[in-house]
Amino acid sequence: MTSGSAGYTGSSVSKKASLGKDGEDLAARLLEDDGYEIVARNWRAGRTGEIDIVARRSDPESGRDVLVFVEVKTRASVRYGTPAESLTPEKQAKLLALAEKYLAENPANTDIRFDVVSILLDGRSSAPEVQHLQNAFDAS
Image (cartoon, rainbow, N blue to C red; front, side):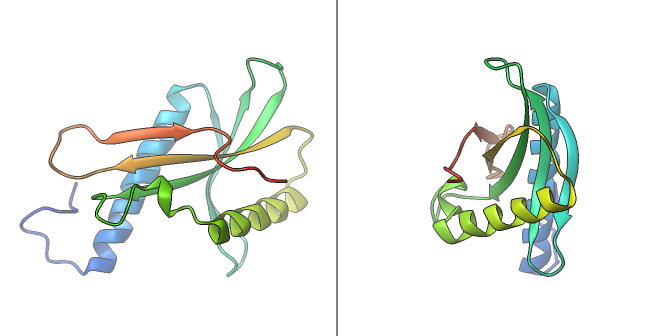
């Protein structure tokens, strides 16, 4: 990984973009390994914003398909809080609005859920700290 390496000469914006992409790639692999089908990555609604990952999975309890809108939060340290703590009420509202746009364009007769994959890639340990928070916030 390039972020945090001593020889890296890119801008902090480049480092942040690389960190975010690395986190999203890791989250997608984690979800697939856990039985999710990745339906879309970086789904954009014009300039309104983007949904990091849209995934589908059969809910083991109900047996119904669930469409999951996943926000991936990746940080290199907890200096300003954990990755999941950066999902503010404003960001939640924006994600909900984006999900409504997604569903208007891609109707789905399934339950929906909003998850967060929180990733800490601090460079000090060999393995990232990853948390998959299901039903991370209430969409009602």
